[in-house]
Length: 209
Image 1 (cartoon, rainbow, N blue to C red):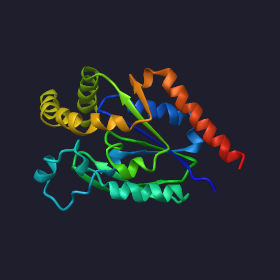
Image 2 (spheres, rainbow, N blue to C red):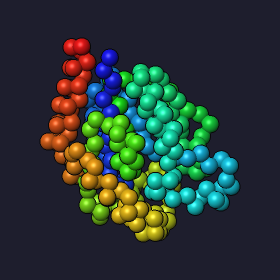
Image 3 (cartoon, one colour):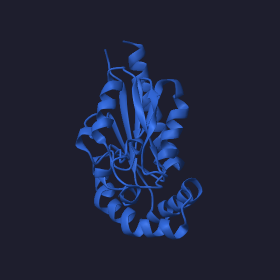
Image 4 (cartoon, rainbow, N blue to C red):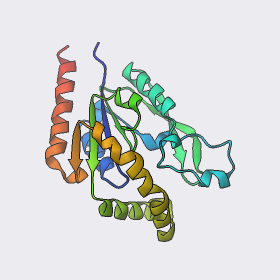
């Protein structure tokens, strides 16, 4: 039996990787399970809130990749898994989980999914969404103020002290592992169509087995 295809969509914060992923999910909604690496930030319930606030969410060590890999293996065996939910206000994992049912295509999206060799080895297609830094920071400011209730000053301080250095140290270098580099994210119709055709080919191969 053929296993599901795993497509990794990486890129810096605000690069447009989520837009690319959503376009793929919309195209193949019944055949795709979507996993965000952000759901797999480590559980910090054993720490005080003051300690949790200091978390560097742009560093590889912030993620529980062991659990993510365990769940990917489960989905690859067509088993359902319980995806964690992260509470950004409390800076730790919430008590509830979300059940993910296995599908023929798994799309994994996150800033550092190409940094971990174990994750890369599970991917059939590795994508890096490459967008200019000025565009990414503007999108980050807009998201964090509107969705996470932060101030402009706090977003800029975090970007300069944490986000930008981590991007240069970990995210940008991981681009070399990509099979496909997509400039300008969701606006790159050609690259998205290439991915759609690859997914269609995989689904067709499953139908003909």
